[in-house]
Length: 272
Image 1: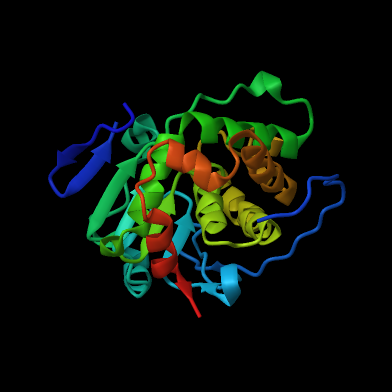
Image 2: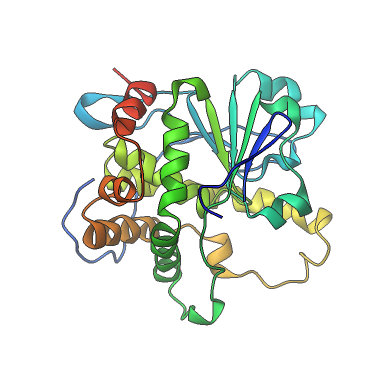
């Protein structure tokens, strides 16, 4: 249930602006900072993006990833160098039960914070990947606003330190949360969309691993909206959230984002 938390040992678990227009042919570049691990393929540093008032997003302060349950002892030394203090796991409870959580050595604090949202209705897919994904992300924003607000407040908390946010693929739930954080930091929507789109670069490495390690993966036909992150999807999401709620900040504030969170977020995650 949203808002309910349970303490389990040391683990807390929980059951920019452009006028709207055609997105045809949008091409957005972003650099991004992928950090390779043995079986974690979409781990990257969100830092370096230009933000409001000439500032930049601080490096080594916010990371995003696919599931950290696949971290192995071979990754331990390299992961420790990042200084991650808090891991925020956005997966559904059954996903955590099935695949496990990040190893205890990954961070002193592990928070499981499932984002409330419906299961995807695959019958709604009509061949437009960006449109289908944007609809799912706007749906997530509506149903999961209170949970997203809670995650954003946790990221903004100085006590959380450097934070890694992840779901299963690090694509949809993580992508939406990170996009909203970047919006609150004053990052331009095209930069946000470009950062989101980087996930697609990790798909080949994941697929090669999954063909060997995931039963049935090699025989299953790829689902387009599972393997693609067109920047148009995030542009549509941000624009439609603004159209429906006024702004990302207005949406999250109405859902319970504590007063002062945006200021704390900017103090923690912006530099220069």
